[in-house]
Every structure is written in structure tokens, then in C-alpha cells.
Length: 199
View 1 (spheres, rainbow, N blue to C red):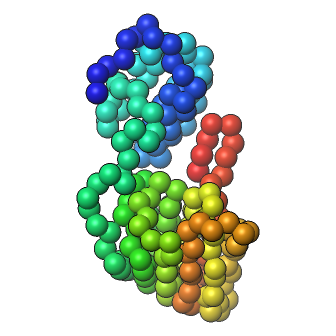
View 2: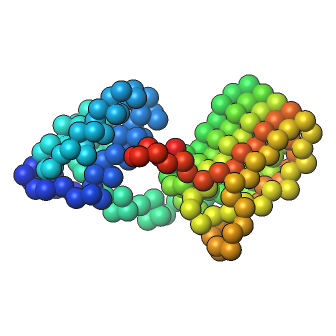
């Protein structure tokens, strides 16, 4: 991809793409919150490519290039998703986020751990995904994309489950959450938004 003319005016979609890259860099620990806030403000004040180019040059992954989301998607890859994946953290923290390949079935066998599954940008090849939990003193947070919904049938013992993604008549991805939770918590939600922040 060629580098844009630095004098070319930047579009709103491209501004949002840049903010998305800055947000991802902040989540990875490459930028602190003050740097993210400063650079985001400069992106919204910028008029041309030349004004935003320097905000990306010290970041990896196509550094220095403005890319609109969707131009190159993970769905174009030929990599098949596995049929099943089991996560077995013990006193640990596990995350799946970004463009990860979602299997048809996910097992979460966690002890004294935290697990975060972010489906917003994931590559999902099926209409339904089953998640079977076996939790002991652990927490699971699930973030679903818009249009998806979750059905929870979890046996809870001294635990809590919060499902903010119940069926609302939209036929999107269905996540079936089952299993059992002891002294644990499960939270299913959509993306939080505040100004340009997304989490």
C-alpha cells in the first residue's frame, strides 16, 4: 500500500481508524493513558495525513500508514478455526482478543484465575458457539459484537452471572454458556463506549 500524500485531507473514517490503532497500542501497554489522550486529541484536530503520520510512526503493525478498517480483514485468511479449544488457567490471567479464530466449542476450566474473551473483532465461522465453564474462584468476562446474544444455563454455587446480551429478536451469533461456577463470576456484555474510547 502506498503512503498517502501528506497534503491530502483526512476523512472521518480514517480518523476513527487511527484512534482504533492508538487504542490497541494503549491496551498493549505501548502508550500510557496520557499519551493516548494527547494523540487522540491531535487526531481529531488534524486536517491532513501529514499531521497524523507522526502519531503512528513509533507503533508497530503498518506503522506510519493510515488504514481504514475492513480494507484488510482476517476473514480473508485461509486458516481454519479449530473445532474445540480448552483454556486451563491456574492462578493466572488469560485473554483472547483482536482477530482470533473462534472454535465451535470453548472449554474454560479455571481455578483462581481471570479469563476475558473478546469476540468484537474475532473471526467466527459458525452461527453458534458453545462455551462450557468449570470455574472455581475465578471470573470470566465475555464481550460480544453488536447483534450477537447469549443464552446462559450455568449451575452457580456461591457465584454470580450477569447476562446483558439476552435475545432481543436479532438473529446474530448465539453464544451458549453452560457448565458450573463455584465462588466465581461470569459477565456477558456488549462493548462499552465513551467518546472515542471502546472497551
